[in-house]
Image (cartoon, rainbow, N blue to C red; front, top):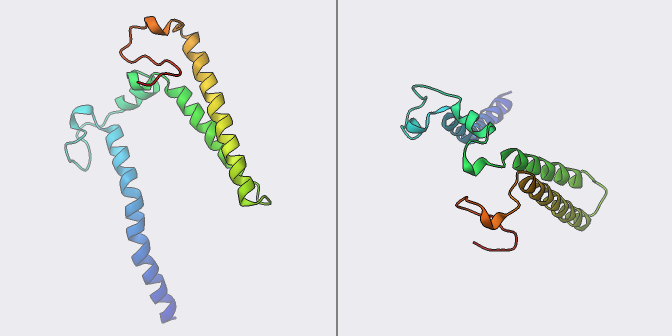
Length: 143
C-alpha cells in the first residue's frame, strides 16, 4: 500500500511540472491573441481590456502577411492529412514508409503551389512585373 502511494507521489512530482511546462506556452499564445497590440508586452497575467480584434485581422486577411491565410491553412491541412495517411500503414517497412511520406509531402506541396498560383492569377495579378506591391513574388527568382 505504501509502495503504491510512493509511486503515485513520484508520478505527481514529475507530472505536475511537465503539465505546467506544456500549458504555459499555450497560455502565453492565448494571452497574446486576446491582448490589444499596445499592451501585448505589458507583462500582465491578464490583459486589462481583452479583445478579439486580432482574430478578426487574421480571419479577414487584413494584414499583408495574411493575404493568403485560408489557402495556407488548407495547404497545411492537406500536408498533415497526407502525412498521417502515409504513416497509418503498420505493415510496411520503415524505408517504405519514409519513401511514401516523401512522395505524399512532395505531392501535397505541388498541389498547394498549383492552387496558390491559380489563386494569384484569379485575383488579377497576371502581370507580376507591373505589380505595385513592395514584395513581388516571381517563381524561379531569389530575393
